[in-house]
Amino acid sequence: MMPMRGSTPIAGAGGRDVAFERYVASRQHALLRTAVLLTGGDVPTAEDLLQTALSRLYLAWHRVEREAALDAYVRRIMVNQYTSWWRRAWRHRESTVDPVDLPQQRGVSKPALDDEVAERAAVWALVQLLPPRQRATIVLRYYEDLSEVETAEVLGCTVGTVKAASSRAVARLRVLHAEEVSS
Amino acid sequence: MNGDSGRILAGVLREQVRDVPPLPAGLADRARHAARRRRRHQVVGLGATVVVAAAALALPTVLGGGVNQRAGPLPAAPAGPRVDLDVSRAEVTTIDATGLRRGPDPATAWTASGILRRTDGRSLQLPDGALGAVELPDGGALVTAGTTVRPTLSFVDRDGHAQPPFAAAAPVVDPTGQVAYLDLDKHLVVRQKADGTGSAVTVPFPDDGVTLVGFLGDDLVADLPFRGARLIRRDGTSAALRGLAVATATDAPSGTVALRSRDGACLELRRDDALLWRSCRNAGRFASIVDISPDGHRVLLRRDKSGHPGTSQYAVAVAETGRVVRLFSAAGRTLGLGQAVFERGSLLVAAYHDEVARIVRCDQDGACQVTAGDTSGSASPFTPVWFP
Image 1 (cartoon, rainbow over the protein chains, first blue to last red):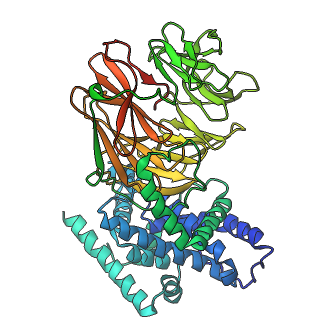
Image 2 (image 1 turned 180 degrees about the vertical axis):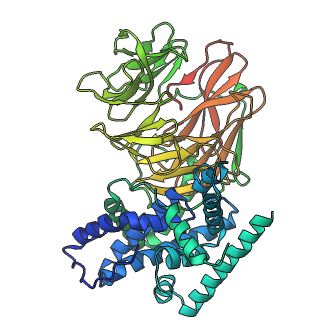
Image 3 (image 1 turned 90 degrees about the vertical axis):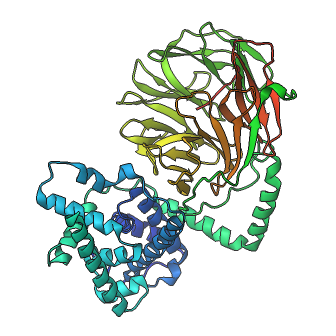
């Protein structure tokens, strides 16, 4: 889950394909998991998101000088791309996920869930309700375990903005959770 | 939510992705392919915009490009736009087949009264009990018969000699002459040359209700209940098809596949494994994408009046954008439409009037003509040879 923090120079022009394939092979599943969280559990969209991000990484390979920057670059593209898709979907007032594929719906609907599992399912359902950038803040801070500085780099904003967004997201989760409990 | 929000959040997030399935092999290749498409698209720049605009002006003359040839590389797939499939701005064509002039015979094969009319102009007498037939490139046909519970297939050679029927269903043929079907006795997906020669590749299928949808490149697309759409490769291996759960149409040359969600709420179109568009709003309330034009630039959508089989309406939309161009519906003495397919640059659709059915050809301007069938009251419906 941690970003790659090495400082190995990546391959030059001749080895770009080999280096790219090696990177994708080693990081694709971890990055897919991040994409799934960014999209709120929509696996098909997450796969498209990751492929889009990797295609852009391939084009920008020579500008990304260190392997340490690769994960951050892909994450940044995924956050921005998904936010863009989400805005377009919102304008069309359209669900962007296939309701039958939502894992939390399967989980919540099971009557035999114990309290702890139900609590976790409820929290995840609330995370899904967050706008993409707030959800991205949560994912980067609490799933990827990035620092506020690293999160700010991925999101392309200041550390103060990350602190505020993170605080707002957690506060919003608390409010949503309270509404959920009282309803 | 209690005080330790961070700990709870971290646990919840990790739990949600614990069982995320691995990606199909070849992600790096697909990403590189998409990158090159993107780079070509960027290089072409304004020139491409002008070409697309010119194409948009030219396309109203035909549905699929006018001729059964590709007009060049298909546009790069945009990554995941959502569309609404709104029909409010689409042109509407109402079809009353009784008043239409007669035009040339269909350019696709079709059957009527137990005879297959081939695209090469020859006719094949089909065996008794034939329900339909798929034209084979070697001059013969693959004939469907039997019952819903016990469907059968039989090969008919170019001279009309039929081999014994066997328990099988869901025949699909690709432009190169490969044929595939489900052998229901052996529980195998069989893939072989159209004339039955060559080694058959067989793949066991564990579920009842498997359907073959069509070829996609060199792969075969199958729908499996509870497991979703899958790609069956030439070597017999299979992999989950990306996207929504149920495949409804394929176009092998362009690598385009249409899918819908299991509940029917969402439709999507993918090309070269990338999402062209998805619609979950589905404002036109279409049930599925039933065909893709021979040039890959148009798709055919179908919607049905609930409880009224054979009264389908069809719409043609732009494959690359999902924009609905034209809606076709029955009018006057024509009671319903069905079994529509693309025919080169036009649409072929069966128009029903009491016991008579005619095949009607409509171009994208909405000009229609009868291509097969008469007004004498024949009880045998005319049907395009292959329909989803």
